[in-house]
Amino acid sequence: MKQAIVARTDLGMGQGKLAAQVAHASLSAYEEADRRTRRAWKGEGQKKVVLKAAGEDQLFELADVAEREGLPYAIVRDAGHTQLDPGTVTTLAVGPGNDEAVDRVTGELSLY
Image (tube, rainbow, N blue to C red; front, top):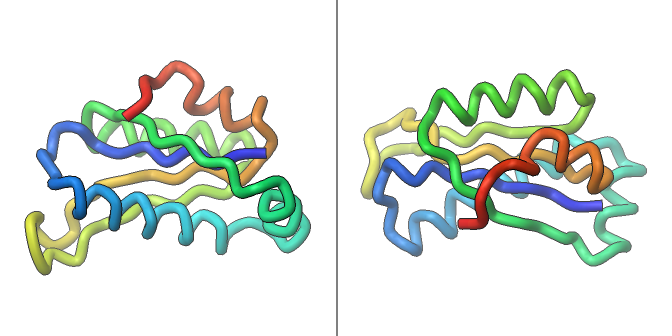
């Protein structure tokens, strides 16, 4: 099992900002998963991968695919307290889910 977090490269987020957005996405999608999936993923070490997206449109397209696959997912919008305007879409987390299902959504993306 794994989770993929997809972050926009076009925003120029600093490293700390990127880390915070990835963490928000990971936790939010985890909370959308059912209890059995959460327990299994935690038991297997909570495998994660962080991937690149070119922009907001790509995140929403991937979210649509995740929904069709029946995977938990979460889109993060920034609160706007630091580097970004309020409501800026920054990241998408897909899963936790089985590796093959997550790969059907994000398998073509490059590592961040």
